[in-house]
Image (cartoon, rainbow, N blue to C red; front, side, top):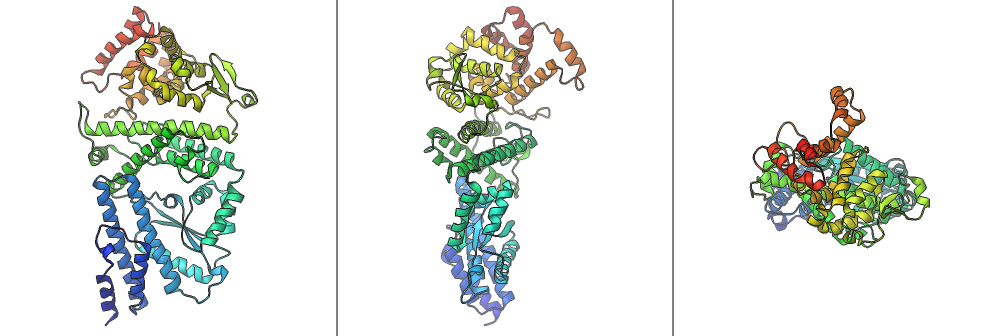
Length: 581
């Protein structure tokens, strides 16, 4: 039988589980099939062609199966795990084949042993359809000629399969040294996962990484990752409500959740965010919110990759409609399928923001990261207008505070604004658990409305405080009409953000005009703003200017009617109501 005939024969009888597109292949199955090819006495070039044909067939069938399952209503979490498993099977079987069949040796020395390790997103088993394959070839000492041959053989096969492979070949010493000097390498190695080879070598690496890199560097790592996050947010407009959001890198996206995962894993040595519940960092319901938001974003990203046919992570206008249909959204109650999908997306991004704020604040505090006002750390919790200052943050004494004093759900933000204080995660959690008590009684309370008007009219930027209120869900509960436009899309060429985000940005710009910070951009506005008869009427009018969008009809006419009812409730006289409306 000729070499080509042997090759065709070997490929025409694949294992049943691989041939039938109902189950993904395992490394053991592929190793057996590769061994069958090698036993066919093929020439090296024919053998390599056979290996590529087998692996390409495996990859194509596996990808088709994973995609079909997702598009038939599967979860993004399953899609990622299956893509990881498929890649594992290919990488492990090729490494084993290269080591034992292509470059065999009777008695390998200690220096010829190595481990294949998955890093980055591949390491944490989060492979989207077009994700990179990040590999570390871990060595005990310096490279040997044989190990270099094995590594090259495996890499060239993976590249020829069309996989995007990022790789490093390092000794344990090199891993430790480079991790200490580079936060990106350190983060990647934090997610290292053993695939194949010398497991004792991998265990040595994990032990030294924990002892020499992670130990006593928690605060510095948190500082670096949060700075990295802030820089990334600025690059993506520093808003989670951009109308064409980036599912991976944007604010409120997967990278924010990954940052929380990295910090949690680094500080608490846990492999899953849900394990933070036992450490008291997360409540059980917060861990559930984390998992729900993560799976939603994973599902979006996987569908987006399949829809665009590439590693695209932006939900651009041209794909949002098809994404909505793929994810099962339908028109309902005057709202289109795409509007419902995008509102759901932005609400999930808001959840990510809530969790980020709470978890990071808790981790910063527990790792002894200095607060904004370092001298306050030396003080015991002290009283401040019915609240307490705890490590430089405004907090409460007990979890029933807002249930007993519901008006304080508004007062909390006014006091924080006036004293330039951050809000403690304990207060935010208690607020979330008590938010249902913010109903008509609080909305019609004169003190609550007075406090809200003070927030709007403060000389201190109201945008920051209003944004905090919106993130906590208080703003939409206190102003139900505003709550209707939270996370609402605006499909026109004049807006980049959702209605609520657009309004909050506008409030910040109004404050900058009042302070004279925009004299070069809008000199006339900076001049005439000081002759406005009622500053608070102006602020309320700006808050209400888009509040009736999405109701049909002229939103400015409908918005005026909303203002006519709201202004008296806020305690504004008829003259101001007419001006603001």
